[in-house]
Amino acid sequence: MKARTVNRWILVADLAWLLFAFLGAEPLRYDNVWSTAGRAAGEALLPFLAGAAILWFFLSSWMKLDCFRGGWRFPAVVSQVLLAVLSLMFVLLAADYLWRGHVSRLALGYFGILLFLGFVSIRYVARLLLLQKYRTGDVRRAVIVGTDQIAREVALKFKRHPEMVCDVIGFLSPEDSGSFNQRNSEDVVTVPTIGVIDLLHAQRVTDLIVALPRPSVPEVLNLVGRCREHGISASFVPQPYELYLSKPSLLDLDGIPILELREVSAPNLFFLSKRFIDLVLGMVLSLFAIPILLTVAVGLRWKKSRAFRWEKRCGKSGEVFSLLRLNVDREVVNGTWFERLLVKMSVTELPQLWNVLRSEMSLVGPRPDPPERVRRYSEWEQQRLSIKPGMTGLAQVHGLRDQNSLEEKTRFDLQYILNPSAVTDASILLQTLWTLITRLFQYSRVVAEQPDTGAGLLFNEVTTQILEETLQSAHRSQSSAD
Picture 1: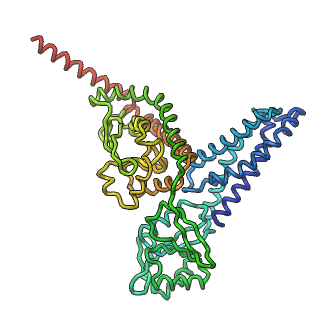
Picture 2 (picture 1 turned 180 degrees about the vertical axis):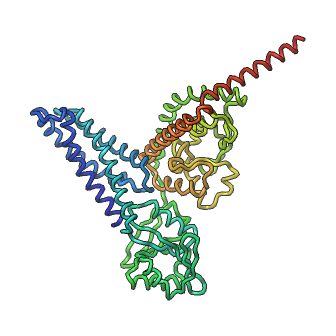
Picture 3 (picture 1 turned 45 degrees about the vertical axis):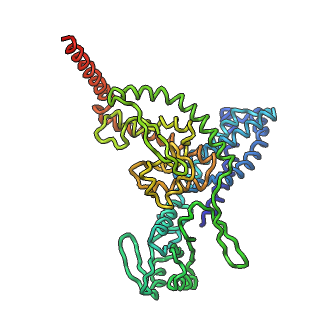
């Protein structure tokens, strides 16, 4: 089974669920009783069912609603399906208003809820079925020729995409002696060239993927030819790998494959809409953030004598700007419960809404790094600077923070830059909300298990600080009077 086949089956299941959701909406609307009015209302909904099926077909293709692009994650699935269903229901409700027919809006509401729950369930079940194939070994088995960053990246991509139904079981590295090194985990075994095919057959390998900077060496070409003779599929990863921010297009010129690497360039309309959303949503979020920041600033002012601080960061094209954040260290080791909570919930980053409104940052994008770190960027990592940095991004919703390696974060940041869209931004914002709510529940559980480190301790610390400063002030006043 290939990824395209999985996509088709998910789309077929979606269209079938549209019918079931339609049949279930009216009974829910009329308390499970099919009256004459209920049947008439159901007939009035038939045109909406046909329109929903056609619209969902196009939405599924445009938004890649199989939800496997970028790797399967449940929060991403929920956010993408939610956005698609909301778009569908907006069109249906607008059509109902313009049509002015006898259509129950409550029935349409039930229809939308059933669609959302069903579509999420379909994708969850699809992933369970795919994982079951991996557990039973009913998948293609691949070996990658290469052991450097390119080979590791290919293996990681296969691991994050279960819809490929392909398991990378090891690596081969060609040597100057005309033999190959078999690498599986940390084991290295030298295998003569003539014995590689026997090894691949013994391991039930079905696919050979060549991921080498120089794939045209004689040993590799001979291996590829022998693999094709023995029914093992051969594939090549185009080089160089640094051309990550490009979309490949294969041209078949009378049997000669020509791989065209087109540079990624989002339309100006996207950046204009992104800036408009940053301004509008940034001002709305600021209305909620200001009361929180003022309350937190009072506590930090008593504790550290300064609530905010400025830090140098590099933005688009490496331009240096001053980033505003709360005066709390990112690595809080000996800090209070109060400071640890601020870092855990990313409240320390809320002041960066000011940078968003000043057009130095965006709501969504790669996180900005200090100039000294940017100076050590490799050519591959410098591609992060092609757009404005963001308060949150694809790397952050995958759980990567400052302590994670730059290579890990760059992988997700470039994946975001490669597919820019307003829908992607909205999905990342929803996933960020999901992440923060999850962290809050996790932290609440920890605090509940350790009540002595909770809000009571915070109150005692702040109260003690206030009393100490008051006594010191009174002592100084008394000394001056003496």
